[in-house]
Image 1 (tube, rainbow, N blue to C red):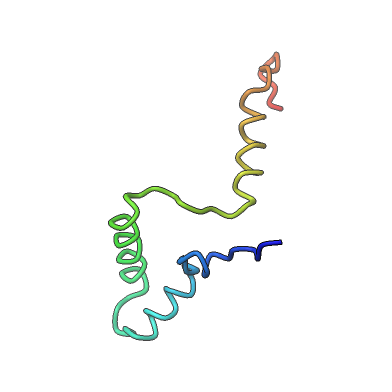
Image 2: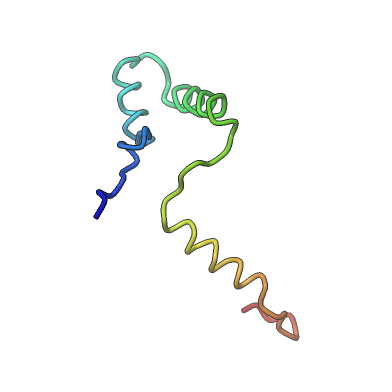
Length: 79
């Protein structure tokens, strides 16, 4: 059986880890600015496309899609 591929092995880093490391290296820069720069750099590299998401995202999205596609309730009831 193949080893499970982790985000780190695939060339991805945890956002919080990147933020923490950069904050430690540049303590005079406000946290919001470090976050803004990380976001901009990610956009420049990925074109804004999500390449990986937590597995729970699919389950949550499926739940919302199922709710959205359910027949409408009468009398304004919400399912």
